[in-house]
Each structure stands twice: as structure tokens, then as C-alpha cells.
Amino acid sequence: MADWRFFSVAAGGPSAGTIRDELDLGDVKIVDRLKGVGSLTAGISQFSPGATRANLDTENTLIVATRDGVVMSVCQLLEAERQMGSNTVALTCDGYWSFARARHIRNVQGMTYGTLAAGEVRFDQVDQFRIVADLVAHMQSIEDLGITVSYDALSGVLRDRSYEADKGKSVGEAIEQLSDVDNGFDWALEPGGTVDALTYTLRLSYPRRGRNTGFVFDLVVPEEGSDQSSGSGAVL
Image (cartoon, rainbow, N blue to C red; front, top):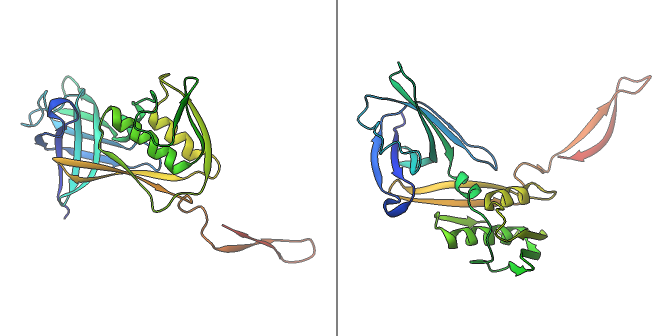
């Protein structure tokens, strides 16, 4: 049987990355979403030694889940719900990508291909993967979240993009929107490392996974006066 373990880890500040305690969680549900923020929900007995205010600090806590020693999920603790008359504290967490959604484009600090003109950060005919790498590099230059960008090769799709500098545009939102346009790409934020030395890889995929299988199917449409007939093939 798989050995699942759960830890309270400091998210930021001078103690960032410090393991506070192992948590005895129950009713755990972990959700991974394609190109989006995942989640973790769980419960912990209010009588558990780990159910302390420090371990369940909603301002500065990561809940890290491991399976057989491998990091499976890293989520930001958003809510610790204590109901009168209940012995269980309900925990609600968002995936680590939520931090990228809370960071904003300020200027071209850390970027290689972005330029600043007329108060806008601009990309002119830049490969979409390089735009993502620049946005992450900018975010990292302001606050190190431990995220690196990885892809096998450039997508070959060039984009023009402009973002108003220091106007509250989310880095995470900008990447999500770029990935969703026609001829876009898939991405996943994959946790790794160890509980006390976490890493995060933003893995980009082009073409989108599963969009073109290479299989050709014939559409069979019944015709009047005949049992059926074949239409033209289509690549799916």
C-alpha cells in the first residue's frame, strides 16, 4: 500500500521552505487540472498534535503531499475551517500555480525578449515559449518562487503581445491566455525535489497533447435508397 505523508511547510519569509511538522490528514482529495490551478482538501482532528495555529497558518503555509517519498502535490493553504461542535478542522488549498496568478507584470526586469515602450511590455514576433520563459523570469527576478520553464524545442509559433507595465496584469493569467489562443500550447506545473527543497517545473508542450492523433476516420452517412455510404476522411 502506498505510503502517503503530508507536511506543513513555510511558504515564504525568512523561514521559507522549513518543514514545520508532519500532519495526520484524513479524507484527502487532490485534484490536478490541465492548464489550471489544482487543489487539495482534507480534514485533521482538532486534537491532533499537528493541528496548531502555526502549522495551519493560512497566510504562509504550503501543504506538501508525498507518496512513497516522491512529492506529488504542493498547495497553498487558504482556509482552515473550525466548526463549533465538530472535532475536525477542514482544510482548503489551491495548487502552487496560484502564486503565479498573484504576481504581476511590472516592467522588463529579468526578460530577454521583452521590450519596454510607451509604458508597455512588448513582444514583437517572439516564439510563444520564449514569451512564457520571459514572463516567468520576470516573476522570478522580483520574488523567487523556484519555478523553471522546460520544453523540448521552441514551438515555432511567433506572437505579438503587449502588456501595460505595472497595471496589475497577472503573470499566471497572461500565460494562461497565451496558451488558450488558436495554435496555442499545453502546460503543466510539476512539483519535484524533496519536502525541504521543493522545485517546480513549468513544462510546455506543442502541439497540444492529444489534439492531433494522426488517425484518419471515415464518416459514414446513410443515403436515401441505400443502407449507408462513406464520406471523406478526417484527421483527428
